[in-house]
Image (cartoon, rainbow, N blue to C red):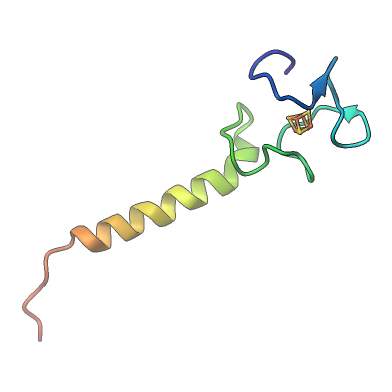
Length: 69
Ligand code: SF4
């Protein structure tokens, strides 16, 4: 993943933020977790959940008032 986005904590594929573990974007403690779309879809769960909520809210807002009352 090195060089693909330039996380300031990544040095030589190691995470200087998390005990010099191999950089694993989205892992617990990762600065970018939940804030970034990752190439690995499994790490995008929070992103897509958020998108789904936004879409549901938008659909609701866009819905025309019905005359059922
Ligand atoms: S694991 Fe996250 S915080 Fe650590 S270097 Fe990689 S992208 Fe940066």
